[in-house]
Image 1 (cartoon, one colour):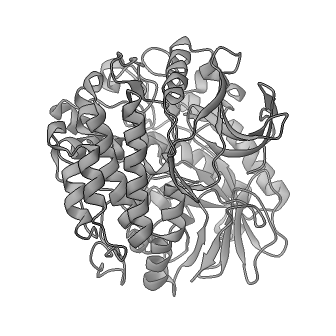
Image 2 (cartoon, rainbow, N blue to C red):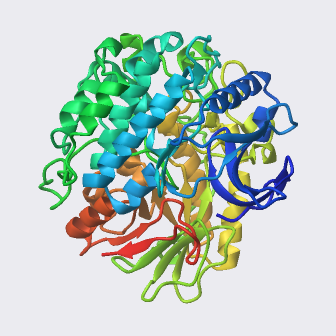
Length: 590
């Protein structure tokens, strides 16, 4: 991906030419040395550069990565953890991540799956021989190079004989691929933990789903610790191998040498079996409840109330900067006036129904929020970022981030409008490095809406016909802080303003608030992955088939097309929704 405005253009003597990826803690760029050598340069986000505790973690990452130099890892070639903006350069390995490969091309099978499994075992062997436990083996940390997989990102690894750094309020690992002991005894994690993660990664590679995948990190952690893995679609002998890897007791998991011998028995013709059974409401759909990693532009929901369930089990997982106290204990729900009769959600009366025109139903459409490009043939409806112009001759939907600040843009907002934890630290959506906005009181909702409404005004002035406020479901990811009523009250302000400007309003995802669509002012829906997760029928019923579906996987597109291709507008896009002509671009329809 090309550099964006504000991106670093050079660091440590390396010219940065492209973005390779972005995470909650930093951005990875393609860099070039003066001699022409290509490297992958990880640059820490500026806010974390001021956090000495984080700098210590970053130094540990560099030290751990430098200890490992096997054929199946990417060696460190340069680093400066003490720079004003810390960075680390590793050898550039050309290849897509395993998560990207599976999402775009489908699960692996046969020789490809066998080669992946053997390569990962050998990578872990090299890592463990160096006295390091990786602790975050997952599909997005596996590069699929031409000569075999590479394990990258030692950001949460540690030397096996060292104390784990305690980082307040940051989840150390990725729940669907963590071992039980990472939740219960993080300071006692051994190499066996990576074997457990390897089992989860192989299940994902073979099926496209994960063996532990609840509706929230809390429920996923509970499943990892107490429930049997879901192994639908994993054929023998791989099934027996991953069952051993996924043993709850670390001592019961196989050693890497034994695991290597077992994987050698995998046949070259191994093929995955489609998991699940057909959904009677949606022909051809799968009923698995497993959920994918939040890659690309996807915004998946987290069910409310699960945090309370996990308190009973003793599990404590924090995915944002928080002291780990519930809102009830810290008073974060106090002064909420979302139910107050004086709330001004209706302060601006909607325009007449005739003034607002929803998009046409069941037409070809495109999802271009990652960058505008010429409309494909036959496309009548398109969603674009509010920063881009509308497409001539089409019905245009204007997308903007409504309940979270854009990445690294939290400083554009008044400090008191950013959601904060009990310690006064800003709460972040770590998957996107986006600060969450504080919608808990009517006064703050009014101030936030006055800013967001300027984007709505810009959309109207540019000639858009509708708006798509993103992150309506933020409250589901932060139930200790935010509520559904607060989200609805804020969205009512935006809907009223949009209607007054003659713009229709799209509900983005947020299936749990579909029953309230009319009262909130939602005219139609833009839904991600409803084919993947059997949700199209519910949105179709609620919005009378005025639903625009974007899928990110081949399975999701197949399900959406077979079940709803004759009624809803469906498109498949690449996870980063990059413009046509850009590397990684993908667009398919029914």
